[in-house]
Image (cartoon, rainbow, N blue to C red):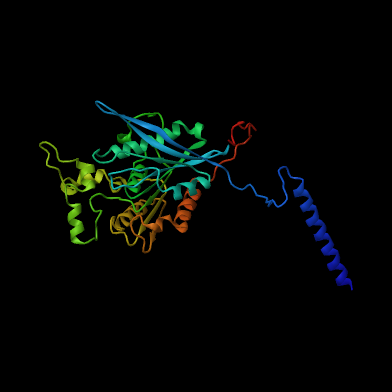
Length: 344
């Protein structure tokens, strides 16, 4: 009998709660019979996208090349770490607004995420490195504008973009690569993530079949064009191995001595375009110098295939950057001011 009373009382209370909620929804502005009323927890911040930003102007005799950057900016008052993404493209293209899956995941984690184009062939080394460092200096120059913590800037790249990210990390403090605007700002980076990147231009095809080895010994292969330039007038072109010292200076492996920022190195075991040995040798070299480095070999992954767009890979990169650069810093005192147009 007591149990029946408890159940009855509980049912009455539930009925009252349902009736109260039902009555409350009737009082909502805009309510109409049959409307489905939901409640949404506010857990995510807005992310603003900006594109077409000119971060560097490269002057030649008769032209000015404007290099572009796109930004994803979490709309918060926090002081945010930043990451610059450099795209792959075999040293022949730099379509910087791709890999949105990775860039958006990083932005949702609280990072300001830049994506920067850079000069490619027929431009020659050190043009890409000069551009990469210019992008870092640009973010530091405009840190207050974009809510960036200038002491926490990392770089990320895939394939040739991975090469560029590696070069920036291994040449921190090297003044020979400082040209362009905002030279009063540092181009040093505090974290480097490289996906199936190139670390030594002399042995990109190491371990591959003989026919692939021949391609890499051609004066027309892109790494040779990057280092030596195209055949023209009295220059017949040159292979990448024609001047090993020059090629090594244009490679991350030529700058691995000494203290470097933390590195995350990832490569696919089934890569048939850039040898997995490229990442293995970089990992070993950085480890030998007692640097903070993680190496992740993704079993069965090919070069830039769909594996790299999967959640486990993206989450691994995001987690590493969060661990290495830290979380956004809340402001000590909020000014409480919000633009009247903020939600438009």
